[in-house]
Length: 256
Image 1: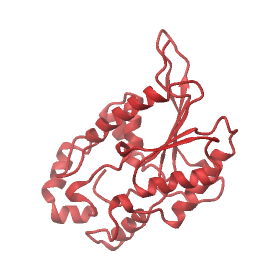
Image 2 (image 1 turned 180 degrees about the vertical axis):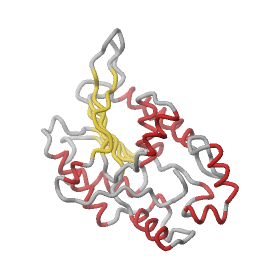
Image 3 (image 1 turned 45 degrees about the vertical axis):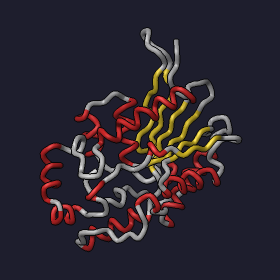
């Protein structure tokens, strides 16, 4: 039987960012625009986000060296890169592990809705609010932005890359990215429908530093070995250290 996957695949949302904090403050104040000085790509972790990332790294570090991730693939956004670096600094990756940045793992692009709260979207772009309500978030693409389907398209090639370069015994891959990325990977890996993935999304936001974990399952019924979901939105690494769990959407407050 051929194999397409590593032994383990972890997909993690970055730690809490300064954008998460600013978004919550804007919503609480009823503002239309989120007050952030940086580009979205440059938004750093908050102090709590750094604490969360270190706690996650210590959880990985408690594993045997030959069980920790040995390849780390990261979104180019600062908050994801900082999360990955703190996981590494805490000893959470295997010795001689490989780190890579992949722009295909970037946050969903919000286009003209970037940095607007829900109230701001309704006030400035009521036509987009109506279109999104009518079409649904899976297919709605704001001007200059992406739909979930657009994100899924680029993630298909990420999975092809993983299959090409990391589908061998002993390969353990950690991806550090964003909330929509985590959900869209679930859609692809588990071959879900639009209705199924949106039902998962409605259950609640992906936690900052929440872990989604797949393990390589043995071949069965003539099928090639495949990935089996072992955990989704797993936050025990934070809870075990008393680190607060946060799950606010990222800075652009447009509906994901």
